[in-house]
Image (cartoon, rainbow, N blue to C red; front, side, top):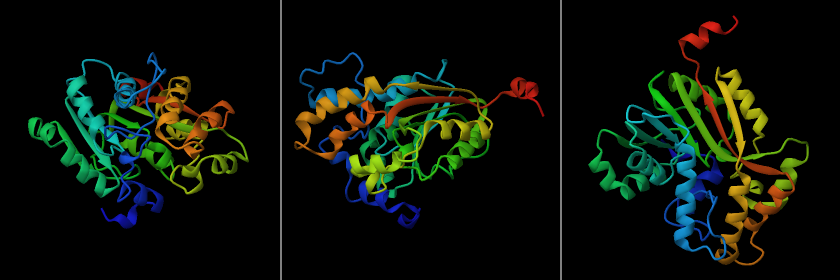
Length: 280
């Protein structure tokens, strides 16, 4: 896939910039972390890595056992560490990491070379976008995305594509931060947070995404706020990781003022029995 297909802010941030090297991240993961039950007195780099792994575990536990038969795709896999964790710890039948940025796919294949060699038929990384997934119709048991959907230009196509590639009964799990609804939300987030101001992050309202999922045919849609397990822990780590006054410290006040929140969203593609009960 050509770099020309990638939104300019995403191309810069995940290309030569390699966001995983930023002080706010650690260990090659690129997410804000799930800090529940962690000691925030003086979080270390190891704690930061653990928080990011924990966010993946929080998402992957949403897929029911037995997991050995499930084949999943991660949309927006970045350096691929989460997909490797999914295979190693949860023993899924197969996991394919998908990313729109060729540099990230190259990094994922390099960083996870040993895992790829160990599981050649169960772990893979490939190019693709959220609204054009590289899978056949009804070919996957699960699709998940960890802190990537805020970069997608729109979520309607993602919802449709996830529904297309999932088998009946298949499950979608998405976690990221969503914006509140309101006419001035975009402007206020852009004032507080550089990632919204430069277009890297897009202020998707949660209700709009759940409506997209419903329109795509998903059922049993659930949303859960996990902001209290994300924002305070992240901000405490940033206290020692970034310079005073850095814009990333504004995520916590943005959450506290209700401008955004972090959610886990789950949805199911109806099975044959459920589809038969739906009104025509």
